[in-house]
Image (cartoon, rainbow, N blue to C red; front, top):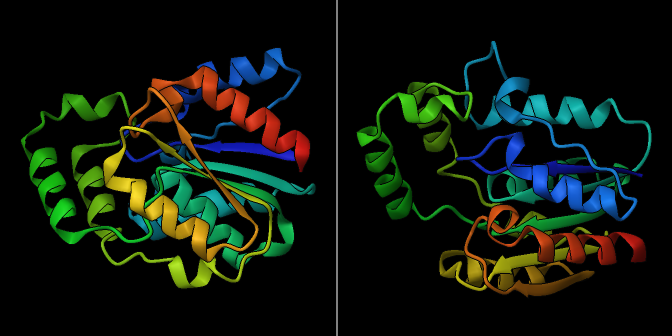
Length: 208
């Protein structure tokens, strides 16, 4: 099986380094592609990022264990819905089932106030980042997620109040899912509590 870790909107592949090292120490290898590098040369929006991500998945001959945070969770879920036959298991971390338009508008105002230099570490321009964020406004996979029957682990940081309800709703909708709360963590579980995330992933992937 191929294990793939998918970063969130304000992250890049390096934000998985501690998790990858922890998994490696337990004999588990995982790839963490950089979404913005994959989509380089395309107009950056959700559709282009999904297309670039799906190309990575399609290039894998073996079954996939997908683990995504936030935007990464949406991409993993979208791909699993489209290509369920390639999915061995799914891990969704802090993944919204619907992007609140008020929150999205507020985030875009904040992004607009941030200097361009703040986006360079993510490997994306301020303009592209804003376009990508806006393109996610209509995403809603809850109804489609209900048809999935692959083993799924729904994780949410204990302090991630914005996504706690989404985690519960995914768990209720996805019949072969388990819900777990990651203590001492906010939204970015891979950065806030990577050791606990490694433990969850190892246990889940070994079982499945």
